Length: 330
Image 1 (tube, rainbow, N blue to C red):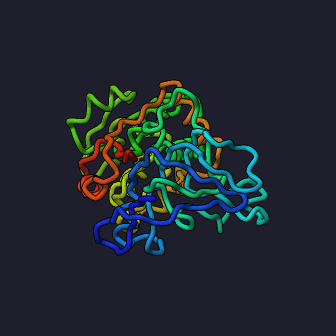
Image 2: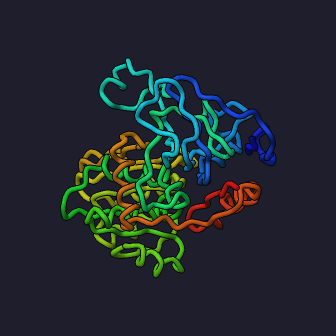
Image 3: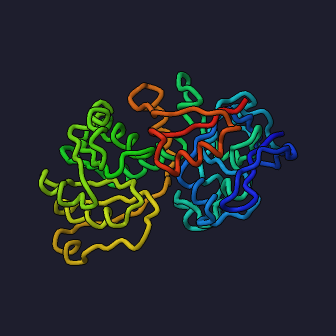
């Protein structure tokens, strides 16, 4: 099969022939039709992530199951599925037994990702894609959509609360739609004034244009009970914390570009919280897939052939993708 292999950091990814995968017990083989490109792929490319090279990246794959390993009974050949990041825990540790993410969970980093004709995955890491949801549109749901839904659910929103979305790129444009779908007042915060009409059309109740100090802008607008941050700017994340209302929650989904400076007194006096989040409950993925199938959430995607992956990666790194890039497999 052909696969897009990262052999060295900061070098071109090579589309080359590799051996077809064969499933062990509990695994499946998927014919990949689409794979989303994520910021984490850039981290792997730059060597800022714990990936053992050579590796096939791509952790937003969608396609059809073509082979089952022994013991797989809940999936069938022909099923339309996507694969999420954490695929299989040990099953025995306290985290697994309580339904949390296993600290030793296997993922695409262990088995290889979806930028290939065929992908090996644990059956426990696959989710059925609802009828009516196209495979290209479903791809970004398996990381970007899953992440922001987990962020919203872990924020424990209450009726009448205001949510502010800081950073409205690949994750943020989905966070706006998901917050609105949950019936929450939703503010979008962006540094690009030309996005205003577009973000209102996505479902934002208000769009705030800011510089490197979004906290001041949000404070003038009355603050927020919840901030979902998808930016990698540590400066912006630290600034926005000051604009939380009493008992407000800042949920961080991005890898910051430096230390995040949060005033401890601001946190203490207002019972304000800073939380990090990764996709952690399968119910969150199921919820966002269902919303997408119903048309209440629609990823905005740019689709490119797999052979153009290097150019797409450079386009993503330059901030030119609006909003999510998806690679189409022949």
